Image (cartoon, rainbow over all chains, first blue to last red; front, side, top):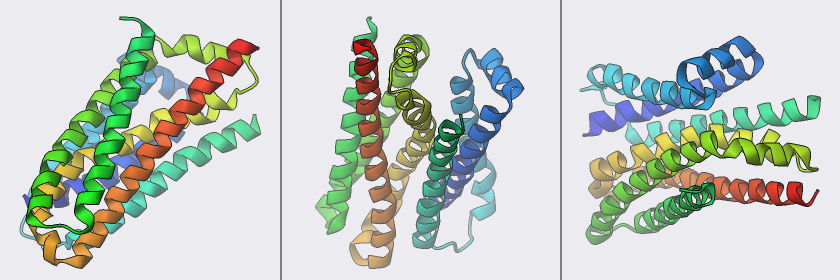
Length: 102
Length: 154
């Protein structure tokens, strides 16, 4: 169970930062946004499906890698808190800048 | 089902997610065996509510929101869509995945948290971030609804 938590927390960091990155990339590249919309009916659905898949696949890949390794959960949780917060700020700042620049 | 009922269900489950997150946080501040037992059940409810909020909100966003978006963009509060809604719909994923990890943490480390203050503090910081995030998302929802009303007033 503790291995699953470790893998999930790292996957949370990866997926959150990926989501923030994808957000900026799709909003600044119309073909990518249109491609997501074409594939998934709506770009936001595609964004969600890919982010959740990245999260699930990361857990699957990380689980055997982190198994047996001593990674302190308390430090990992602090890193998760900080990096998820940064990913949220990236998205907020991007839209504020976009709005002010328009 | 009309869009207003779907939006109402989204808001309801969003608030239930927030309340579950607060309840979970409170149970873990001074944990005992009985509080950890309750926290384990609440953490499962929290994840369930977060996923229902996502699915119902997603359905509303794709099906009904375009009409609200047009009203907001025609009114004076364009930032209610361009900043608030755009940010809300994308930061939600981080919250959803954080809520998904919560039960794993409580089920794996719940008993250890009773003795280990460092572990408890880190958990409270992560869970506190989720509470803050859920609160901000609820407030953003209110701002977007106000943006629609102001757009309708012209």
